[in-house]
Image (tube, rainbow, N blue to C red; front, top):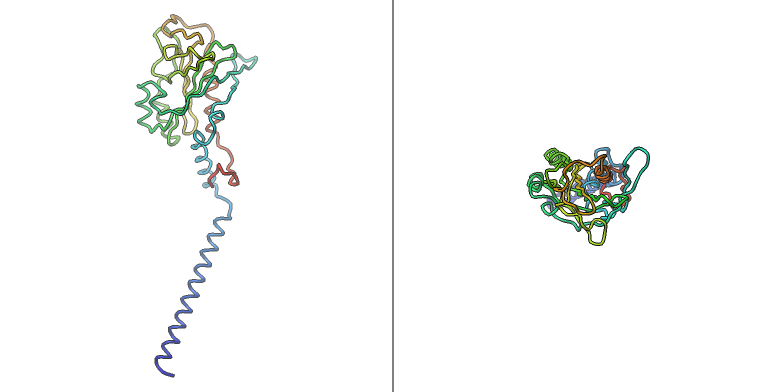
Length: 248
């Protein structure tokens, strides 16, 4: 046997060994990938998927799910009443949905959007605009929430400001509700969302015309429906990787 033939066989053996190594490596990689794709998600992965789904709701859900047509509230401990939605404002930027003083705070904490809808109480005497403020994460939402002004009622000092801007809808009981008619404001938070409300009377009377507080809690509806919307948006659901709305 010649030296050249020996070397050829040696190179063939080397090639076979290298090829076998590649096959084994590929098999291990494919087995690992199959195992990864077919294993159950870890608890940490489920938590991340749940958080991501909550953060997408303001875009993924239809507006009528973010702002239901009816929301229950109670003026006392004896019975429930229902607030009716009169309209939904098209998606808007953070600066369009609130007074300029609030816009500065929202901008500082990365506000992404403000969604608004207006409701009237069962007797159609009280109007409340609800605003969902969207932030990048719960931590930024919490920081913004802590910098918001306290709730404010009609005490003769004039219109409530700074606050969520009123949203009137022609042809409804909320047709006369303007910024000048705002008499009350509330705030709530859930997940990456801050929910604000601003309320007034359906006859459109300016808040500056209110010289003393009205008896009872005329705007008790507002914090209740605001809380209901905040809770709906922020309650984390059990991830279901078989559905398209989840990214597991």
